[in-house]
Amino acid sequence: MRKIAITLVILVLVGATLACSFTINTDNVKLSETQVLDINEPVPTDLAGARVEIDMGAGRLNISGGARGLVEGTITYNVFGWTPEVTRSDGSVGIQQGRLEDIKIPNKDVVNDWGLLLGAFPTDLEISAGAYEGLIDLSGVALTNLKITDGASKATVEFNSLNPVTMDSFSYKTGASQVKIYGLGNANTSQFTFDGGAGDYTLDFSGTLKQDLAVNVTSGVSKIEIIIPENVPARVTVSGGLNNVSPSGTWSITGSVYEKTGTGPRIDITIDMGVGSLDLISQ
Image (cartoon, rainbow, N blue to C red; front, side):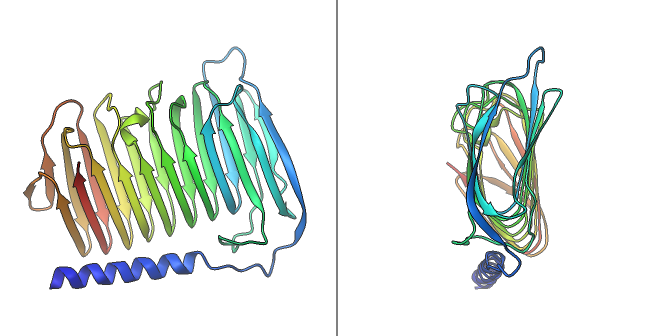
């Protein structure tokens, strides 16, 4: 009975927080005619790698592979002060946009749609955003580092095929959000850090692990789902506040440590939660 009560409290708190995060305030928004900016940045010459920084306000963000150059696509917007600026320096491309911090999503009057493609060149990618909805499909994209920072978001990140180069690290920091990351085994990294506020998060470690993976997860009031392939060895250590942990599959449990056997590279996850619900799924 106590476990059910804790779960209900968590779901109510997470739901209420997310509902507040996506309210709309447009009092300070000045709209303009809809404009389109074309992005077409070539691969840098005489360099082994590049850096792409994407800094957007609030809206919709879709990123995938398939560019012939370094990065290409379009940005469609209708807010004064949100004209994107493209900067270039020594193999680095930055696409920046001003922000109005109290715009939340969805908002039918505000248009700010980013559709970008990344190329096959090894790239450090950094994404910063306010409130947004988006799909970031990094399947097969050659990423050497990945950093994502956002406010209130409803985002999906996918690695449906293996990163062809080794990624030094992957970090994701978010506010009150709904974030789903699929195929983390294909990210081809040894370090993954996730820092979330109040939210609903899914971290799926399917894919082809090439090396041991150390994972550090920190969150506030949240519901977290961790999915690990059945044949992958893993250890999950949980600490923090009042947590409801629900393991599914074959786990060996010692106190707050959950372990499963398997073959190949190992996943070692440390989770520090506030009040939260954690589903550990082996499948």
